[in-house]
Amino acid sequence: MESSVLGIHHITAITDDPQRNIDFYAGVLGLRLVKKTVNFDVPDTYHFYYGDELGHPGTILTFFSWPGYPEGRRGSGQITTISFSVPESALPYWQKRLAEHNVRVEGLTTQFGEQVLSFSDPEGLGLALVAQRGAQQLTGWKQGPVPAEYGIRSFHSATLSVTRAEATKKVLTQVLGFRALSEEGNRARYEAGSSDNATLVDVLTVPGERRGMESIGTVHHIAWRTANDEKQLEWRRKIVDAGLNVTPVMDRVYFHSIYFREPGGILFEIATDLPGFAVDEAPEELGTHLKLPPWLEDRRLTLEHDLPAVSIPSIQTDVSRGEQEK
Image (cartoon, rainbow, N blue to C red; front, side, top):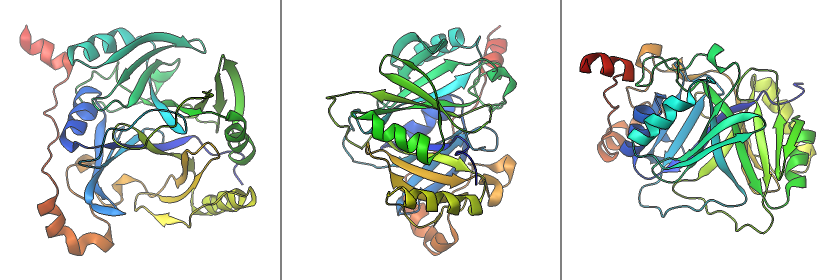
């Protein structure tokens, strides 16, 4: 059995405006839209996946579209910040870029010796860019609007905000195999796996904080990586043995999933690395077609008619734009 989960597989949040979501994450942050599909459980709504060139595990940010839902509330029992890694020299570029796009920036701080630029997306979702040593060795999406030398590489970490942290920490360390690294104030950092990206999670203890409300602009769940179906079943048995309620294995086409809630109320998933996003779409065409699972193909015409039309922003890097303006 794996000694720990392999790190973050993906994180899923909630939006109510599909086009605005694409404009921000593909057009401003420069992530690749690697899959345009529907929520398999509520198929009359979109499910978008963003990531690097192929949507490798550890780079995948996804969104459920919940049109008409109220604005959510950040609070305890939630993932309150999603952090991405960028090269150490990239933050001045990002400060300027975010300002040019009128993004709500909360400021530049230092956490565990790394510079962190915190901001929010148009719907209030908490985000951060971390100047991570070694990030320049990783490869992000090179054909987006952000020059490759500054681009987002992968997840850096996620912040779990809970009122009583000990039970959450116990699940992380004793069930999922995370290792305690260090603490700063009410923030404790843990690491899983041995990869060079997307292996960190912070537990923020917030006693007395009001419970968050899951809706627009909040995180729905975080998924941890496992190598394959066999390893996933081993994790499922371990979770059951720990006394936690866990779902059967669910086929998400691009990976297989199991879900459970940790004691602080945050929804966890364990997802397999395979089969990946090229299973139903050529790598060069990722994100350009509406893809449906086999059991929904008979509804394609209805879904294509009912879903709002969306488009990927015209891509022009800051470098090429500058050359044209000379």
